[in-house]
Image (cartoon, rainbow, N blue to C red; front, side, top):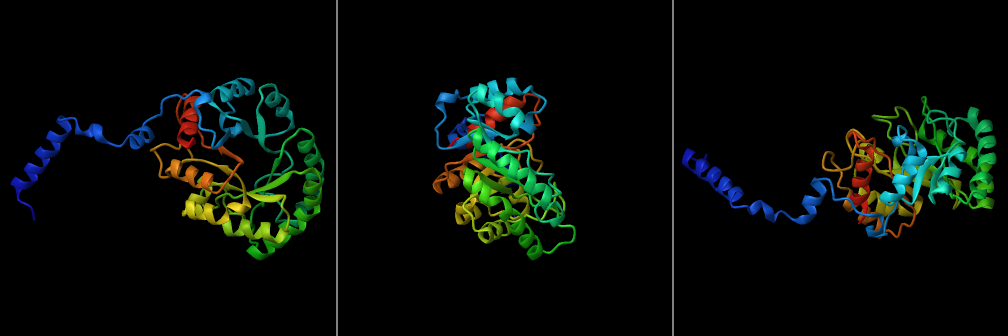
Length: 298
């Protein structure tokens, strides 16, 4: 046990260090991450990450206004926009990085045969529209488990998706199955682990089916994010972000260190989009988005 004198001396030493200004020697990289980064004009972004953001997280901002600001921040695209929003994206020179509008819902997806007829009709109609508009990715969802075992879910998804993958191949459209957590946000969702999604892609046997690896969701379910990305990059077509816990900003208020994750993604040779899908907790939502882009711009 330390004496009172030694404890007092140590406290005095620490106070003297602070007074001497030695805290200024904290590495610059730590400073820029633990505070809101300075605003970087779009032209100063490094270009290693293709930045996007999910429209629904900024639904309180009129779409055209959001597109204007997105371009200023340096985004190249907007995620989860259907045909009704594509003319606005084109107007402002933005890509639709993840199209939607063919799915029924998160809960009702390809794992239930009762939904196959509707889904086949929806995707058969939407895939040509995506291609005609010059876009590439179209989201799809597994649906909830509802007591179903993994094997049955995989078989049903494969049976259903194979009915539209030929159309996707013909039109060069990528169907992208999203990985979601079933622990916090989407209770009972069946495609809730990377292994399940990878197995689905393998069994479907098409280069036009890949995964949307949501970093927020998979941190909740699995952790081990960087190793998982490195080992499964060939099955991943798209990424989403979000702070854990809470799904808010991706700064030092949460547990993930996004610069390291982005570097790992770049090292895999990934050329697709990384879309911000956190829910801004600050009043200035666009400043939170700008900060996130800067954090991820490695």
